[in-house]
Length: 284
Image 1 (tube, one colour):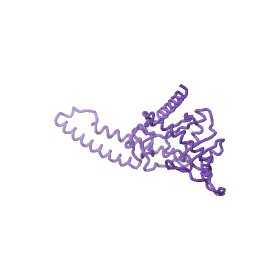
Image 2: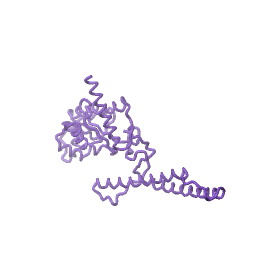
Image 3: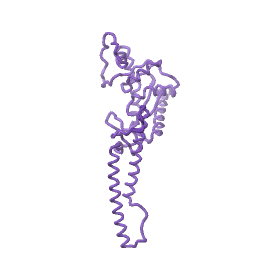
């Protein structure tokens, strides 16, 4: 979901030092110009009369330099946090040169959408068979790989129930996720590869699975069986229409607020009103 920020207001880690050097050179040039102007004005009006304000151009560049310093520190802190989360030493962690920092909404992230890269947040919803949202969240993660298990926990916390069945697209598929979900009392159907629009799964391969089959192979076989294909096909009539109703019917395609905490509250409100509208239309 697009953030209230432009991707053109983002800057990569390797570009920050270049921009800082450019701004410092401009500041030095402006200071030299200011000193020359002061000298000329002193000669014309006297040395006892002067203004204390910085020129507007200098103020803007000094402010920009401060924001670039903040951006550099923020990206370095992110790299250290990511290293800690991955169980790696944080003292030697450095940001990826292409890591982005957005000056309008620093907590948003560059993400790939249907129409290219956008400045965005990753919104998550889980729905039941009646298209009611039973779990919702916002994350700064640029993909869904690490969202499957947190969403199961969120469903239990927000709806009070643990799902007996779970359908998820290929974005949630990983060996780690399949191993964790297999240990739960949940019958999961998770696509193992991204399908093209209108594509149908091929016939189920014949014969037993080889002993070397991975969890992903086993899930793929499960979805190729008639029952598995029929169950997974229900997904396109459950969660996808809800996103369509929110984005197209209600016109919510971009957050109005900025900052992760405020965006979370805004998404919660959007999901709550979706449920209210669903219940109203059903029982009114």
